[in-house]
Length: 317
Length: 105
Image 1 (cartoon, rainbow over the protein chains, first blue to last red):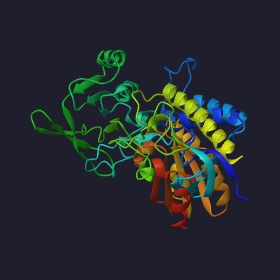
Image 2 (image 1 turned 180 degrees about the horizontal axis):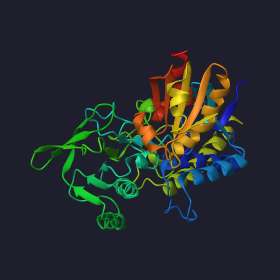
Image 3 (image 1 turned 120 degrees about the vertical axis):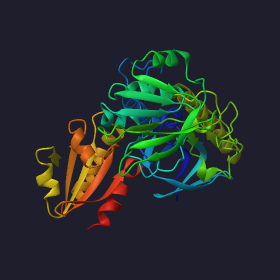
């Protein structure tokens, strides 16, 4: 007979791991599926200073390692598998993956979000050739070179400051003239001597043969386009993109109710519009997408899933 | 596994015959650290057929840039010394690297 898990959690970032911890601790049979690397987006972060209790030198990866240990200690199973399709109606949900079909009474969707691209010519072909979405991975290649950072949120400003450890100069290009980043972060960036700003502007094109050598900016107020080329002595420059995120809801977009940006709509109990299906973390509509809110979502979703599964069993009995 | 630096890169990669797969990684790159065990597992699968090597780009930045590596993780496949294929970022996974090797064996 096929195993029917009490709950299958999709995604092993902070939301999914927290849901797994709470579910397994409540003695539910729990399976966590992850298609990529355990930990999600936080694994790309060098410093986690705003998760209460995270010690001074906590990094994204060290925090995730502890979360995994804690989750597995309570008996949650983890599997690397990519979900291709889900049947969510009815009392037994089917999760189709590249490793087979898994069944569960309840589902917690914690697939998170991935970085949004600039979506300009040259970006894709020069990705990994000077265009980057991960400062901790790639900033050191641009030691003593010029770097352009796109974005105006917390991530863009914090990563720009990190990149100044290596780069000669970092120019932040922002499409508005005010930042949505936290005030303390804006002030820190403004007082950094290596950081310059270009406002009301965005990328139009990225140029280069084999690596990034130039870019074209458009000023949205004046409509004027300007080409910027790497110093001939350098031969290359860096472009780091932090212009927001896109939720990983592609495979369920016709099944679960989403908002116009593609995030899953839930109530306060993390309940979606399908009974027994919950969402947690960056994937859902919310005001603050941080580790601390992701783990909170995961806990709530798991507790609600447990109540749902108990009620199912009561009905069956 | 073969550890590369600017001293041995030419001999072990550019003047080597057969297929050499090089994992360009960096000290601050967490996805690279996550990939390493998968890369090591692949090196066992292809033992005797493909040479697996790694290069620390934090120590050998210029060498990495000369090989047009500016984003991590990047795994480059060389055949008889010529750079013929690469997997970078999301494609630099166990599946992606395996596909790249299979299509060049």
